[in-house]
Length: 141
Ligand SMILES: [Zn+2]
Ligand SMILES: [Zn+2]
Image (cartoon, rainbow, N blue to C red; front, side, top):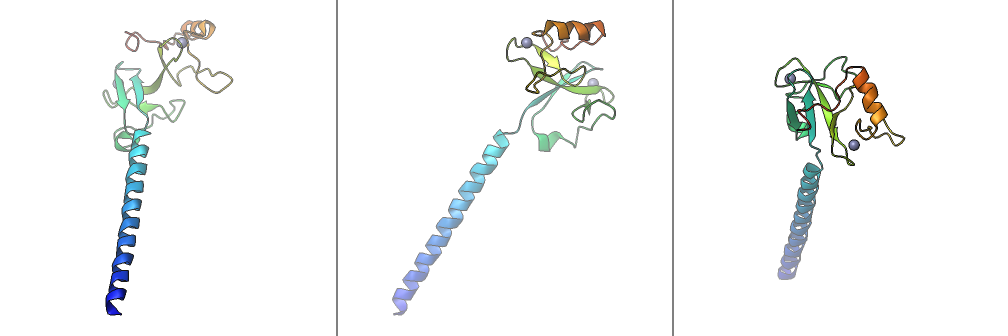
């Protein structure tokens, strides 16, 4: 019966190999999905007025980017271009497409989403009256 037992061993090996393959495929698709889920964040520097995109959270942060102490939010970072400015994340309004700066003079709606200073004219005016430019030309060419 040695032949039969060896064929069952082969079967066992095949089953293990198939299981390993399935795990490898699962892992691969999981890591691929995970990578796709990484958000691309636009950052605007208040000093040098340049925009930088943080594409991969793991690659660029915190190696190149450091939190800006007293920036009002832990999303406010040191600009990697001029090395001294405050870089703020930006948001583009889904309604009017205006790109505006977050965490500078923030206002939120009832859902916790940042308000657009253009759609909410009163908010935009209030920021302007305090000398805060939430929609700089550089972001809205
Ligand atoms: Zn800068
Ligand atoms: Zn808007």
